[in-house]
Amino acid sequence: MRFHTRIILGMLFFMVAGISLAQEEVSETTALHSESPKRLFLTDLYVQRGIPSGDNFAGNGLDGGIGFGMRMQLYLLNNFYIGGALSQDFMSVKNTSIAGEYSRATKFNTYLFVGYDYLLNDDWNVTADLGYGYSQNKNRQNSSQGGGKFRDTGNVLRFTTSLEYTFSSGVSFFFSPSYEVVNYNIDAAAALN
Image (cartoon, rainbow, N blue to C red; front, side):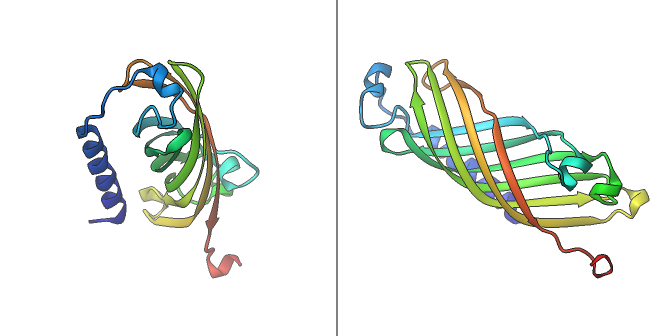
């Protein structure tokens, strides 16, 4: 079984196990003024739109696409939390002379993060977290380009914020912009050096 598949299956197992454990209900007002967090565990499944930027091969050569991700976080005391996340973005090449001779790119991130959840009132929260982890960019050629696959690996530093509206104790709506910086270790062919 591939490494990425094992990570996804492991996170899904913990998500189901977390949902299966019932917690004692505490009133929203009591939770705002107590030392213990309003919730202990959060799983977030989301769809995202990547926007490559910068004066580099990604910003000038790739066109962003739809992606998806999953975050799991454990709340500590005083509304601090820690967690882990997986995300995948699909991009197309808009300029092969800048990005390289391939037709599409897939970016996979897995990272750990730490953050803080600020409770505005019973319904609204604002969060911010900082994450660091592994990133892989898989570049693929179509059949007319040779059908090759090329992988670049590196590190991701991700800053995520969110504005959350709570509908009930188990359902919330998030608006969550994030910014990430990815540094890849790109091994160029000897002929290009």
